[in-house]
Amino acid sequence: MTESRLVHLDPALDAAINQDVAARVALLAVVTALESCKSEESLVVTVLSELKVGSWRGAQRRRAEVEALVASLDDQYFDLYDAAGEENTPAVLQAFSKARAVAALAQGLAEDPVIAAKEALYEACASLEEPELAGLLADVRRIVGLR
Image (cartoon, rainbow, N blue to C red; front, top):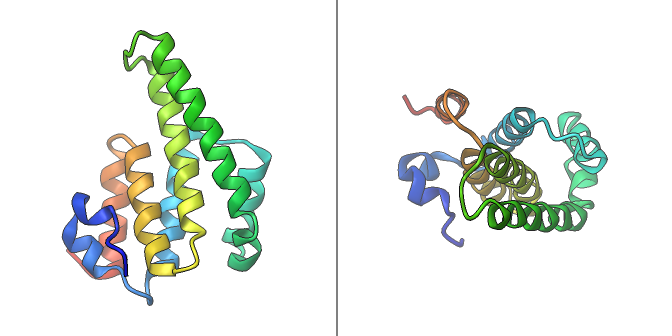
């Protein structure tokens, strides 16, 4: 199995996410990130709705579309960042958070549920600020049995 990026953020949490908790962790990470950034793209709303009702396979069929949206949102973020003179203005930070939240959705659709959960959580963490970030990590720690 390829090492996830989550190991660099929280090695204990990375080690604790397994097949038994992966779907819950991925869904929590994705929902938290997308609700925080208030993403309203129809594709995001549709795929998230499929995930919430347990239609993982249906949602996974849209992964390429979600990844294309992530690329577009990343371009928008970089354009704003460049236009702001490489300053992290509120608009730049909002664009970054939105791109990372949608990236969490894309990662959550990976075929391997454990990698999907770890990578979705990593991207969700990048999209969040306090106190949402601490809340998400505390919730995930409870799910995986860490205190």
